[in-house]
Image 1 (cartoon, rainbow, N blue to C red):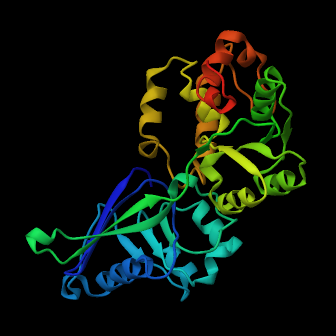
Image 2 (image 1 turned 90 degrees about the vertical axis):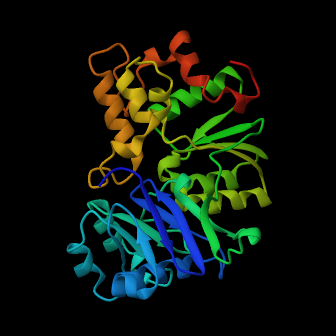
Length: 321
């Protein structure tokens, strides 16, 4: 499944209206914010349709999945938006992650846990915001929308840069850091960034990682603020940065980046970062910018081309392009 889908669920007391953009969406927040109410309403509509007093509008079927026979149900669910309430232990399992990986469905999961088996984006972790109806229109309904919990950029002047990547991405960011005499180290994986930061003796640390799959790690990384002054830069991926810089000068790439969900098939790409890598490899093939993830093409470090990529995040180093 690909594309973005607006979901509107309402009864006489409350309305939820939001858009699902990727294969995995996470709902977080404290009790009584409305996560369970949303999923209960969808389940009630699923069981009783209009007689439930609930209306549900979406271009794709919306279904609720619980612990009872979840694997069998998923095997028979295609091209749907699957909602899962918190308290279902299977969402932390590798079996569930494997089911999501090759699925044509989208998943909306309410949870207070960080689901490390699922590579969800920091852009798709939401809280629920509630607003009252217009009192002058005597509207009593509560209106609920989603808001992003995380930012992809926190700016500091770094004394150390920690990069998730160990290959092409690290080579590029290391090149940047050497220009400003800032140490740059690779954590070699996103799961090791926290440990590397805690073991560092520096207090001003910039963390760079792939935002497209960094959602599970975000809460832990933000907790570093209690001990360290940290900044973050979480683009979709390093490959996305290159595509965004317009080095390849292709209109079709710009069109894709304006609305990636319209092009990314969930059954083929567990995370958007793999799509952007495939796209860059394909579009740069047989050009002087031919891209390989394992080793950075030195042409990306030539002054003119380097500046186009660096210009997308130069403010993080407190300098002008």
